[in-house]
Image (cartoon, rainbow, N blue to C red):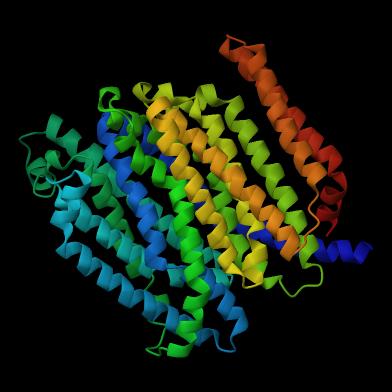
Length: 502
């Protein structure tokens, strides 16, 4: 029994290590991104930040269409086909052609699109985003290949550089240039900067910073891009598309679940209730709430190739079950940690945006459910039944749309938050039930439920105590976090002991 436990521990330790490496740029980037939330919510008004929230919601949706499931398909076919090079070449050429076509199409119709979205005076926004999307889609497969080859450090380096570039350009356009204009209006250096800086661009500089970072990152990936050959396997491509398109539908439905509320808010909230202001508040608080995605996104980068690599392992189902248990333990800890220190964390955003803080625990729990859903999705990916992922996500999208149309006109952005939670909880439950039928995995539901329940119990006790003195409240909440950690260590002490010995 002991050797088998160590055999299972080794891949789990590998996954943990890969998650840590992939997570470094994600965590650093997100943490620095919160600095920019603080900057944006102080430089721009709630309605101006609403523009940023809305347009990036469209970006998330369009990115799914532009990559059309090719990342996951690349991982699957790299394991199935005899020639992973052939899979890589075919994937790259497919995305190259589709990305260039997309950029050209959007560029031509940018005036019409900008008018339809309510930004008739800023067609340049649409052109900038077309390039951002096209460049990011083109880099998707090279990044996937780095993950498939376990080149986590190269992956992390490129992601970190991308983040650093976005930070640098944001600071340049939103801090340095305005400061020079204000304090050194007539100086030679300020006059030089004014050749590339126009105050009226405003929030557009957020988009320009993103575009410049994406372009430079793609240039830095030339070693990966020039590594492919102009060999396009049409028959392979057809097989890949058959596998990928359900994933795209699943992804599109998932993005409807994840971001469509931010697209709908300005249309569903009555004009008397200032929809763009509410959108800005919702977008800023959503950023605080998705602190959990620091871990979930890093886990996704490492987990997808890991799950496929373990598919033929005799202990695969046991490994998947253990991954789920420890994933939930960490997510529950993140939920508890954020809510125990929310009085400090909320100060990241400007004072005008903090009225939306009530949505944070709702969205944290929603993202926990989404993370569990990602773990559960392994059953239809490794059994090549990706159509089930599409069915489930479409069902979730219907829930999202129905609840948003019902609740948002009544409750504003609070209705959007509850719709998100109901959607993610529903698709998580359905995926679990279907997965147990088609690819049974014995998940440790008792421990998963216990640790999640403990985190929520400690959170509700903290609310019930209603301590007004901040220092005392933080001390008590820190004790609650300590209770959770020590409980986990005590119950899971065997795995900790074996992990250190292995």
